[in-house]
Length: 113
Image (cartoon, rainbow, N blue to C red):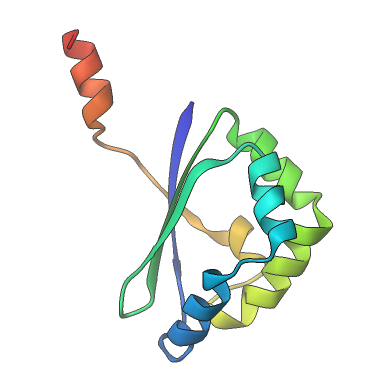
C-alpha cells in the first residue's frame, strides 16, 4: 500500500463554493474514485486556500490511469477547475505530491511492536 499526500491552492474567494461542492460530490465521481483503487481519501482546507489531500492505494500509476480515462472524473475536474489558483489543466493531474518523512505505524513496526 502506498500513502499519497498532495497539495493544491483553492482561490480564497472560492472557498465557500469549494466546500459546498465537496459537501455532496457526485455519486458517479465517488464510485470512480473507489473503483480507481483509492482508499481512506480525505481533503483538508486551510482558511487561506491551501488544500491538502491524502489517500492510500495499491498502485498510484493504476489509480491515476483509471481516473485519467474516466469521463466522470474529467467532467468533475472541469466542474472544479475554476476554483483553483494557478491551475493549468486538471487538478488531479497538477497536484504537487508531498514527500512522506514520518509514519508512526511504519516506525513502530520496525521496532517490532
